[in-house]
Image (cartoon, helix red, strand yellow):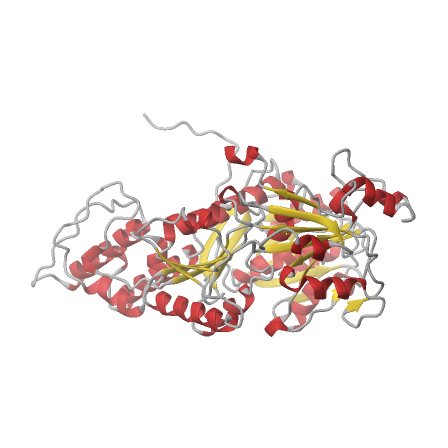
Amino acid sequence: MYPTPAGGASLLLSFRLLQKSVVILGTGTLAASRAFAALEADANVLILKSGPVVSQELQWRADQGQLSIVDLDNLPSSSSKSSTTGIEAFIDSTPGISLFIVTDTVASSDILSERRTRESAEHIYNACHQRNIPVNTTDMPDLCDFTFTSSHRFNDPETGNATPLQIGVTTNGQGCRLAGRLRREIVSKLPKEAGAAVRKVGQMRTMLKDSGASEDCFEDSGISTPNRPVPLRSPRESAAESAKRRMKWVAQVSEYWPLAKLAALTAADMDDVLEANEPENPMEATGLPSPPSMHGLTLKQPGRILLVGSGPGHPSLLTQATYNALTKHAHLVLSDKLVPDAVLQIIPPHVEVRIAKKFPGNADGAQNEMMEAAVEAARRGLTVVRLKQGDPVVYGRAGEEVLYFRSHGFESLVIPGVSSALAGPLFAGIPVTQRGAAESFMVCTGVGRKGRDVVLPAYERGKTLVVLMGVARLKQVIETLTSVECERRNGPAYPRHTPIALIERASMPDQRVIESTLDHIEMALESSGEQRPPGMLVIGWSVLSLWKEGDVTILDEDGSQDDARVSRWLGEHRWRVREGLDHSWDLL
């Protein structure tokens, strides 16, 4: 009828160590970690050291008065890693020790000292046992009365302050590193507001206690049944009955309300929870994850602003986060004008979409207009998706918007996108790095802030240069790169036979790639018909490295054969134009 106990587990307890003494033997990184955990539990921490070296953190905490460091070498009896007479003398002369933690049984990366022997550790363990002091000895499970869990304490996402919520994971000695991984997995799946929700519920309990409620009304501290009906308020109810009814409401709120809603409670909201009348339709066990709010309490949900990257344009390259933002969360989408229609088509019809009017000469005005619209909608409680091409922070002005929204009271969430600077060249069959052809790459813009000229990098045979927003200034970019003397370039000029690819509408069905050299790319663009923005420039020897049979011996040579290499690549022509995508993308 009842479960059979299965041994091998730990009795998981949580201790408050108000002013109780915790002794930590060792002065390395692990000792500092244990000391911090004990300090957060309000313990009086004593560090025992043997030798001249103490970790920087422990010394700083000692200087701040957070803990005390005791030098064993100065005690009446000498102490070493194998002799423990001084430690026993310290224990006997220090009343009220609650826990004893031995950390110097393992080597510390920041403290060069001898590791404590097992014989010495056993002596300390036995000495503490004789005095009824629980012991933890690092990496010696049989010399441990208690162990440490891999723990995490939640902070309030708005204030950054620590909250009362902690979680701990133990594998009972079967893998400390795995316990850390499992702890991270658990934390990542809990809402970031979980700690703040615990704090708010605690505040409501405190409000009840301050109102004179007795301890026996706090039934949610034991095994309770949240679905049991809350007693109806009676004009003749006693103070104890009133407190019990209100505590029952707190229990139901704790059980059923979304954590984000609990975390957002204000003092006035808490008063409403505690003082409201019995709801007309008492809550039943519906099984729904987020049933309706109790006693008619409605909280104004603050708006949100999401800065989202749409990738280079092909819908299959949207991240899952971007797809969810557009299809599940958005009330208003504010899109840059270069985001292709194929991406906009996935937005549900009921979601309003506005396109930025970033035409030449109006870029700053359109930018300000979109930021103002985002703030105005968020203040109305809407979720605003600010949709940008590529990745928002790769020349997407996302940083400006983050600071603007923050100055207006909104901390925006930036969702990365697949950068066009990386994906665009690959759609054209060009790697930005390739062994034997390109050891590194650089991304830059062809136009600076408010239209200013930018300084372009010098020629490096093993580097690929990707220039975004440079097609409109192609002539100036080529001059900057190839002129013998140019103040707008950092170092040697590019040879005029350097390969270049001009990629337009990357990843879209009408993608066009114009391949040539720096010497002939302007003429190639003029001869290829109307331009198809957006476009980018890819410059360097990686451009031809995967063409047909490939050429990955470029960096093995000194460059004397580069003219012949370019001739083999372009054949009898000075440029090549390729249009459209590989049909395999239709399957994706």
